[in-house]
Amino acid sequence: MSEYSERARSSTAGDGSDGVRIGTAGVVAAIWCELFEVPRVDPHDDFFALGGHSMLAVRMASRLRTELGLRVPVRTILENPTLDGLSQLLAEAVDSATDPAGDRTRP
Amino acid sequence: MSPDSGTTVPVLRAVAEHVRRTPDAAAVRSAREALDYRTLWERSAQVAARLAQLGAAPGTAVGVHLERSADLVVALVGLLRSGCTAVPLDVGYPAERLRFMCADAGVELAVGHQGPLSRLGGFSVVATDGEVCYASAGPSRPVPDPAPAFEAPEVAGDDIAYIVYTSGSTGRPKGVRYAHRNLANLVAWQAGASGCGPGDRTLQFAPASFDVTYQEVLTALGEGGTVVCCDEDERLDPQLLWDIIERERVNRLFIPFVMIQSLALFADEATPQRHPLREILTSGEQVQCTAAIRAMFTRLPDCRLVNQWGTTETHVATWYELPADVTTWVDLPSIGRPITGTGVRVCDPDGRPVPDGEVGELWITGAAVGPGYLGLPERTARSYRTDPLDPAVPAYRSGDLGRVTPDGLLEFLGREDTQVKVRGFRIELGEIESVLAADPSVAQAVVVVAGSAAEDRNLRAFLVPKAAPEDASAWTAGLLAGLRDRLPAYMVPVRADVVGSLPRTPSGKVDRLALATEGAA
Image (cartoon, rainbow over all chains, first blue to last red; front, side):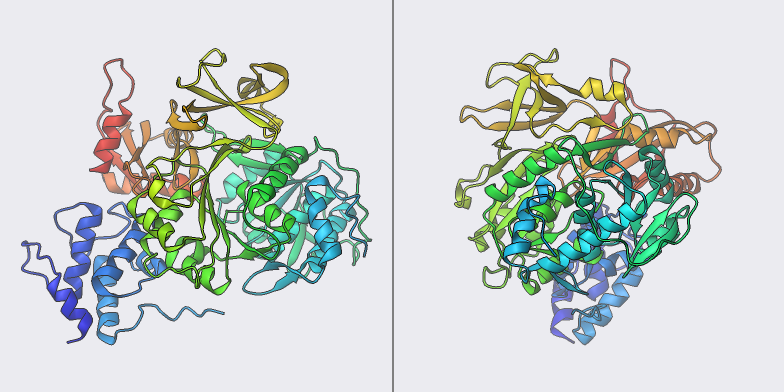
């Protein structure tokens, strides 16, 4: 298990409704609950349907950086609007310890 | 080439002087190209020459429909030199709104990039220089290349430099005119007041449809500095903004308050060596010195925070540079003192100045005050007045409330009407409501701002249907999609809820506060 997912596991918040969430998905879910101020989220929940906007995506990127140690581009959050989709992408990034969508080429 | 510093428009005389003295200095940098002052001057003359070839004269309204680029900077300078009135047509706006703006301002000629011009429709390209296209709305036939040499026309101080559109409470955007003399005063003041100078780099962050673009570009060029272009992703993502500050050695930012907050969320590795910022200027919203923002400026001891206040009708009216010592900052900093040639009077509802310390409406007087709205004489007469203390001096009633504090500085205290600021954008809620209410299935529409902190603030719509929709979420989604076709993205609510009726205050008005609280839940 990588260092990131250890950190993710230790900071996981279970939501009690469908068993204790673990790992990256649990961390992402907990951050969504916190930022959208809802008691629980569903894997199919959509960032925009929950009232997400660009500034909220910025704050989400900041929280993900703190909790997962990942640099997550704001665009990645906007372009992967379901909780499930974003969690999977971030879990892969945590496992490979690379930037998600970090293929942005800079001059 | 002769840099005609004696004959160019006043707002560009300092730029022309840099062209003469340091033609090889960097004027504009983008990811794709770098222009020195000589090249900027030649290319902007080419723009002005093309416009003249196409029949434009001082005062002709010319649309500017360019993506973020060095071309945009060149075109703004070229348009000023031509004496034509620039009408920025934001490439991100819906076509319907852009067509309204073109019709309202009488735009029959546009400088643009091919892609946006094609999406807008109604214009045919009649000449091309590099990637810059010149397009005509009328009968079109290509003109010969190259355009005849540029000859600087006579441009008067009262000639209109640009028209930018702001949200209008009755559902109709207002074209705000700003004259060459207003802009020359602003730029001369800003260049003098800023800690940046020759060789310093300023990011071109503002949307092209914002007057702040002129402040960024003309101040940097007037100082002999460099304008650095960015892309939309860098404007959206503070992580990328930190990257470009480091990579391009950016010294000065003009950004809305929410972007300062966003930068502060990612500032824990900022250092003066990597991030040579010396000045962050902000306007459009009440600044709040949060712990994160203080921490960011503590990490960047060479960087000053400057709070500016004004309206589109006046551009910058007042400014306040926060002290170098962050520990002395108050939570809600002052908007400071008026800029050169400009005054602020705190007035009662009848336009009489109130004693210092009392709250009143802020009236801006003097050089900052533009000539008025385009084609709206009654609206202009209501807001563009004269100085209560000197009828020979123009004034603008801002609608903002404030007072003079004991130290002689101005304090901003919000507004009384339903004009709001969301992420630095000025929005009349009534404009959004009127578009929603125009839909035949809507009985009543109210839009409120939910969220109290600036970073949470977002628009929520509450809709009373004429008949209960079969599928409420499909109905609201359809209405929001309709808004996206008609309004800039920043004016589209993030959420719409169906309600049976609207809460009322005891006096019978819609209780916006109750809705805003509900919307935030």
